[in-house]
Length: 173
Image (cartoon, rainbow, N blue to C red):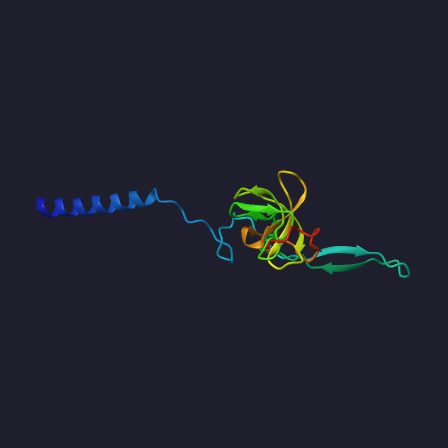
């Protein structure tokens, strides 16, 4: 045999041995069970549990099969928060009167209430367009025009009483 053929034969044999050596370090496949999972994976199954129930008349216990359900459902509770309505808000600086003031009625001016002030609502005035509130400065009832007061949607207006006109004001000539 010529040197060239021996060289090619030895080179091919070396290549085959090198490939076999590389494959020898590869991880061995993990044996799998019938379900396709590796055999060392913990298995959870739906297995019936046996509960023995003695029978009083026969004296021979009877086995009762009770299935144990497996669920993967996560239940998240739903919490609904209902905000408590705040006291009404005076949106624009407004006057607080001893009664509703208009074309024919002129009641005494008690104070002014600054915009951004929360007030306690006492009721409605008998005259449309007026609220009766607790004056934040003097703690007495006073009348304020509805247009200057913002009331939260959840505020219960059904329990408010209706205020009659106070004592006759000074008439405007």
